Length: 380
Image (cartoon, rainbow, N blue to C red; front, top):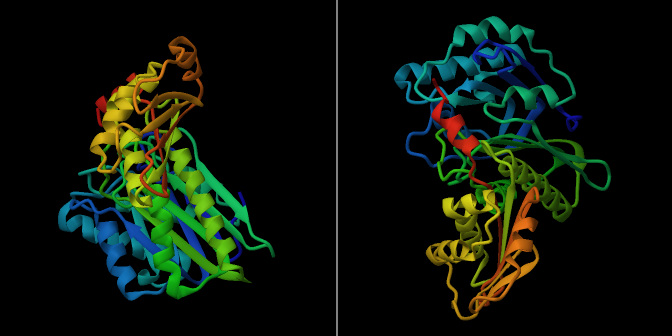
């Protein structure tokens, strides 16, 4: 996929991953791009997140990004902080910018020192091009496929998104690595607030396994190379790209066979709608039921009940795969036919709370034996 104007990217294999697959990704913006940054709230945050937060407090522009996969460089003490700083220096030297102009990111196994020497030996092999595909491949860990999305605005400005994420996904920001790139010229004053709104309604609505990671971030970078655009159309495109990436992450959850989509309407406000939707997609009981094609609406009801969203159980409505299954009480339905409908690649739940105009959406995946196997053998 072609990058927006002003961006180049590339990747190399540094032998961090035992598989020997690409594990070092670089992105360059010329000149420095405006950026918006959100990172995990996990108190065990990795050095790359601590450094990124500090960088975001003092810099309005950024010129580069370096990501290593296969090693999280988390819980590695003072050495980890030094290694992260060295990673920035190596990338800066290669890109021809200052270290403070480069954002770092790491993803992979926790508690293992980052083999910086391997990166130092391999970084010269990176070839920067106008395509993002190599970068998208190099940031993956247990993912089974790359995650990309794009939109083109009237006038030709583009929004391109790339992400990774498969396990340890339950947002308290955006539990993944996600980068949305644009050549549109945007208003610096509204960048952070509007990006947070996008993240809250997309990346923050993904759950694979109720585990919030230590390394993850969502970043928006704008080169401005394509000139000014209509703000409304721009933010609509950004949200569409982020939503598509969020769905791809959920569908590629570790061991997943089905995507779960939950839409909630009629909530007291959008925040309550999002909480209710996310509670359902995160429910282990409902995830297991989806895997087994079991239309057990009681598990949906339970999750809605502890979500914190307000509703009257006597007015609540639940629709599964376009079949009404609950309206103020149990509704007769053909269980065999509905179980067959749940064998589809996407299982959809629609909930009406009848409390207000709030709406929200969330995405998850079924709970399979494959998930248990992947995580039972992750480091052994």
